[in-house]
Amino acid sequence: MDDLDVISRAQLVNRNSLEKKVAEEASRLGLLYFDLRGYKLSGDLLEKFESSDFFEYSVIPLDVDGTTLTIGTPNPQSDKINEFQSKYLKEFPKITLGMISNESFRDHEEELKAVVKEAPPEVSGEVDISGSIAQDNSFEKFNENLGSVEIQNILKVLIAEGHTLGVSDIHVEPAEHDVKIRVRIDGVLHEASTITKERYRYLRSQIELKSDLKLNVNYPQNGRFKVKIGDIELSVRVEVMPALFGDDIVMRMFNVQTSLLDIPSLGIRDVQLHILESALARPHGMILVVGPTGSGKTTTIYSILNRLNRPETKLITLEDPVEYTLSGATQSQINEGESFDDRLKAVLREDPDIIMVGEIRDAKTAKTALQAAITGHLLISTLHANDSVTAVPRIIGLVEDVASFLDSVNVIIAQRLVRTICPYCIQEYTPEKNEAEEIEKILKTIPKSHKPSKKPKFFTGKGCKECNNIGFKGRVGIFEFLKITPAFQVAVKENATLHDLKVLIQKEDMLSMEQDGFLKSVEGKVSISEVLRVIKE
Image 1 (cartoon, one colour):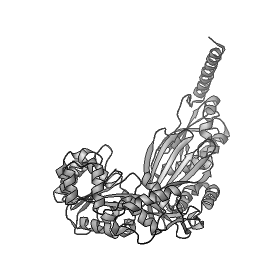
Image 2: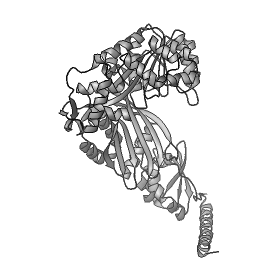
Image 3: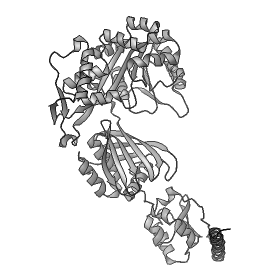
Image 4: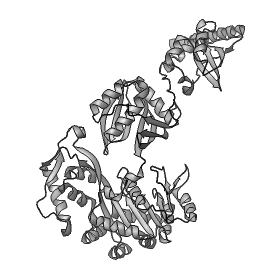
């Protein structure tokens, strides 16, 4: 046995002896005794107290039953215990006193120091942001305010000023000594602020409290809460992931006012809009919107639903999760462990005219969705695919039935989101050599009916105060609309390759996303470099 083993064993014997003496003293005084070695304290309970009170009064809250609080202290006969009871008499009219060793108290010192008292909730699950909180559209002011605002207002300032900046996601990322705040604006992350660990702990507890999450747990969680900023209502989706230096938190903000979503605002060209309007006019069939995560599919879907949502139609949505509130529609949240297919079969018995399925993820859902589209329903859904043509073999592969695909699908819309040039600092620029080569390739493929009549000019954003020196402000969609024409149907039946299908649709004058982006860049809406970046992702 080495020296360390001898020391460890001696320490254990000493600790056991010490705890025995404390237990005997507790018995003599007629008190409960608690051995806190390996005991896990309740984070929910601790956060009802000021951290400094644990040390000032030498107490550790151990349990609560209704309004009866059980505490442990190494000094049960101290006058400080009476002071503690008086301070928290309103919240806990009855306090049960137990005795612990000084060593037990020291075992939990670091945990007690890290506690941040929760603020009284204004409205459970909702944050109401008054106009008194300063808002600014610069990263500098954002950082300054997060560092100086009273700690109880830090969540309000984070959301209010994030909304002013046009943020879609807020990332709270703890490091060893501080915590980084990054924000996603128009699809790109920007480092916006750094806060102290103390402010982070308070912010984390407020986020978890508002979104009804458990405090101080070591597993991923998700939740949501609502935010009111004046007349605007936001839904905030929260994801919490345990990490090396603390919980990594991501808040995604949605404006739940679907009235703001309409088809003209998406950036769809007239020739593409005509294809969409034809598909919407049909009483049955499928409209499929495809693209990767973050490509704007949900916005497009809800813009279409806004157009279709009428008193004379029964519109049902199946979503996971429900992102927007659509007045007049029946919106159904998919439960954990339930598939879209299970719920879709139930929906078909509800006599709907229009059905929206949030995403086609598996073969069963795909088969039921196509069957619904064939049997008199207009069905709208999304699928993960790089472009409209690639979606064709994806769906056929899922259902293993070419005929049902061709009989049901009206149009496939593929899309990406591209940052628009800031209108306050837009300027003409000359593309670099590699960009010029890509431009030339795209220009050769554009159908004659869409080719620019003059030599194209290109633009970018210089960067200014209005856009936080980013050069971009807002986003617009670039689209391709694949209409299932008779010629395309024949090619699919004959097992044409993806390459052959793409050649065919070029002959039919379909604009690709790349071509649509090129034309928007020539029109001064977007930067050609931004189009090329997004297309290649």
